[in-house]
Length: 311
Image (tube, rainbow, N blue to C red):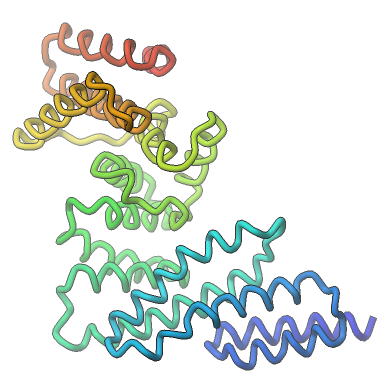
């Protein structure tokens, strides 16, 4: 029992040190715990995670630019998801400590740059916002991501991160509108695994349960987001936006008609644009025949989606 208590204490010490950005002391505590209980699953898990980060961040000292250092750290976070997939069980206290360690390190790099006349650099604002979100400071994340989004209106990744923070702050109406916008702009650019809010996680799981994965999953999410009533907050299109929407629909129809090898991605993308077009027709009270014509196109592409839509 004493050994178990000692091991648990060392594990907690390791997590505390990691959250305080002291990776070396965290590693020492876990190695000490391993000497007491060589088979302790959480100790072995923590060591593997810590060794992964220490190995993958070796080259940071070779980078001179602080922005490059911060960007490199965050780029490794995406790779870390794949590493975690190798484990049958994830220890959340360990992951929380790792998150604090990683995003604190990246934030330190980016935050120093804000005082160098870069307060209006959209990419820097975006990265700082991502770091605060990773650290769980959603109010600060919202502040920086809103500033970034003013400059990055056509950037689906930035809009999706802003939507996610709104959802984490229970601003669900704003979150739904922004998520719908982000997936319309470019579903493939959105890093689904970086999204944390229950609103989007539930949608992702429901669409995954339908059999979609990989790039197809991202394209079908806005379709089922509409069908499930999640992406329910809509806005009126400007005339210039309507023109681009029609052109996009025309191009997608031609690609699919031409037998594109990307049809699995293009079909849900086209259906989502049909949904936007139908919304426009309803908003301006257009000829009902235009809506019926668009619905018929959806029925031809995917009868199941059509049936669910008209329920």
